[in-house]
Each structure stands twice: as C-alpha cells, then as structure tokens.
Length: 459
Ligand code: HEM
Image (cartoon, rainbow, N blue to C red; front, side):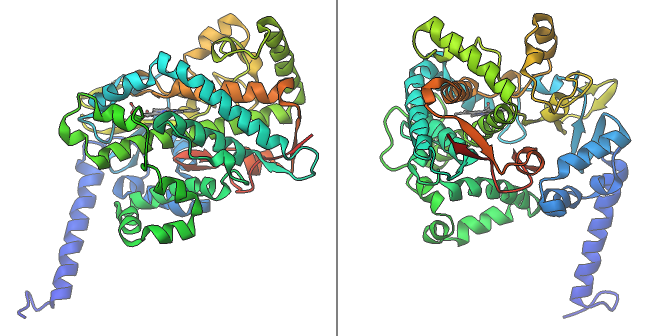
C-alpha cells in the first residue's frame, strides 16, 4: 500500500486522529459557546474528567464533591464538562421553568400527558389500601425478628416495601420483595451497582450497557443476580388496568406504543419509585432512631392522632403532621432558547444542571443543615420562607409525577412503625452515621460509603 509523506498507514491514521483531537480541543477551549464559562480546563476539554470522579475516584459517584469544590473556586456558574453547565444558587429557579428534558426532549410532554391520569389524586387514593396492606406485611415480617437477637437490615426492608409499592402501582402486582427472607438483599445491592454501571456507561458512550444487554444471556444475568428474576418475569400476565395498558390506550402516536417503549416507560416509573422512596424512609427512620427525643415527640403526636381519629389515621390526615424529611435529588434539563443567568447568556441547547442538595444543605437557608430538625418547620412564618427552598420532588413541568405515591408510602410506613400498632420497638445496631447513612456516592440516587446498611434489633 502506498504511503503519504513516507508514512505507513498506521502512522497516517495516528496523525489524522491527533489532528482531530487537537482541533476539537482548541474548539472546546476557545471557540465553543461555553468557552466563556469558568471551570477547570480539563473538564472543558474532555468528559473523562467527570468520568474519573464518577467511576474511579474513591469508589466512584464523587463528581458532586468535585463540583462543589469547583463552585467554591470559580463561582456559582461553572462548566463541568464540554457541553454542560452547573449552577449553585438557591435563588435561581429558571431550571424548573423549562419544559424539555435532556433526553427524549421532543416527546416528554406528550408522554407525561399520556400517563398523567394514572397518577391522579383519585388513582393514588384508591391505591392507599394496597400500601396499607404492604406496610402490614412489612410489620409482620419485622415482628418475626422480635427478641431473636438477630439484627435486621432496615435499608433492605424499606427498599423491599418501596419496590413492592411502586410495582404494585405500575403493574397492579408487587414484585414480592417483602416475601423474600432477606428482603431481596441481592436485588437491592444490584440497584447500587446499576447506578455505578450507568456512570461507566456514560464514559464509554453507551458501550457498557450495550455489551451487557447483547452479550449476557438472561440465564447468566439470573445466575449473577437472582434478584433480577422479578424483572425477567415482569411482563408476564400483567393486569389490563396497569400502566402499560394506560400507555397503550392513550393518544400517543403508534410509534410511541411499541412494546419496547412501553416496557421502558413502565420500568422507568417502577425504578423512579423504588430507590428514592426506600432511601427516604431508611434515612428518616435512622434519624428518628438515633435521636430518641425526636422519635418520642413523633410517638406522642401519633398517639394523639390515633385518639382523635379513633382508628389509624389515613394518608390525608397524616399529611397534617409535621415530622417529615425529604430526600434530595438532582434536577437536569436542556434548554430550548437562550436563557440568562445573572446577566450571562446561556446559549440555546446547553445542558444546565443544578443539585437540590446544594440548596437543601445551604447553611444560610437551613442553619445546621445536616441536623435532623423537624422543629424548623413548626413555625408558620419559617415554614413559608423555607418551603420556597425545599424541592425534593423538583418543580414545574418535569417535577415528580409520583410524589403523592411516595408520600403515601413514606407517611403510612413511618406512622405504623412508630405507633403502638407495630407491637415492637426498633433499636439501632452497629450503624455509623458517617459510613452507613451519610450521602457519599452519587449513583443516580444517593448512597452511603459502606454497603453495610442500617441495622436494628426488634424489641
Ligand atoms: C421520595 C421519593 C421520590 C423523590 C424524592 C422523587 C424525586 C423526583 C424528582 C426530583 C423528579 C424530577 C427529575 C427531573 O428533574 O428530571 C422525579 C421525576 C419522576 N418521578 Fe419521582 N421521586 C420520588 C418517588 C417517586 C415514585 C414513588 C414514583 C412512581 C411510582 C416516581 C416517579 C417519577 C417519574 C415517572 C418521574 C419523571 C417525571 C417526568 O419526566 O415528567 N417518583 N422524581
């Protein structure tokens, strides 16, 4: 084969690659519409910077820490990769006014409309007895450990409740994790792994998930993670009134109703509703158990509510009680038109992200933010001022469609668990806040440093 300038083919390809990389780097650093925004040059140059923190640094999921360091150094708006800006500013809420998501931007509104009525207040109200039943099952299962001296993994137990809750809602039948002897521990561990794989998938531009899906036969997946058995059997014999049928009977165009899209949408709802709700109940229960005076205050309030109602209070009645903790998730959008941030134009089409943690843990707004302090919500004027900054479910057109389902599960579970109805008390065991509870890894959902979980004796 002939050569150019006396170079062999491999050298020619190498030179071409080098030219492409250098040109791209110069563009990203000096000519990209985002070049004017501050941040480390390496982050502007390549997504491998983010990938390193997401996948490797301290076990992965640590870019949130680096992003905060970057904000401390460069200010409230920074460039965190070649095509994305991040804003840390509790008073900037433009992000919630955008109606388009970063992915499937064209049809998000249409798809949301198609499932809206499935999540209507009356549909959620009808679902309350199902949650009651699942909570009863959870309490029954926990009671099996009473005075046995065997500690229970509460995080697994609450994730099992949330998984059964979300799948019962979406598919009209629960996965059955509450029936599993260890509350499907392996499946729960798989969710953490899934978050990590998601990060690996991003830096390999989709290769990791493609390879896993294409190369791993179902029986191997089952061998590695028996918890996926539920997922494998997901769509067999589903009820006619489930979310899949809701999509099928909606006004969406036919190309939006393929089996694959319906499966994806339905499992996205189930996934969205499991880890978020499970970890919220887990952390709230930990906070209550580690601060007995708060748990006592909740118990007193519950006792009063039970007496007033003459029966276990419903979700609607519980909504009036002030002891609640909300979990923090990131919000992410792509914006359709030019947008301003404090006089700076953010060009059309730029990915813009904010992190709700930044607001929820901002000491200027919530003094001593890492302290569990339901009392900060008791005063009416404080509540009004602080509510503006409490956004665990997002806001606007992309906010959480499952908020009432989550709150139904959270309130009913915590209430029944901390009321005399439970017939037992939980006592924390071998659980350390920094290692086992505190948000350390961002794997789509917040995870603590250790995998040990939150344990309790049932007494
Ligand atoms: C404590 C529990 C929960 C929290 C903190 C939470 C939080 C959120 C947040 C912040 C978003 C918006 C994300 C964005 O900006 O793109 C969201 C979206 C969503 N959530 Fe939740 N969620 C919870 C529970 C649930 C439950 C139980 C379900 C369903 C059973 C659910 C289903 C969804 C769905 C389908 C979306 C996407 C909505 C859309 O794209 O229009 N979530 N959630």
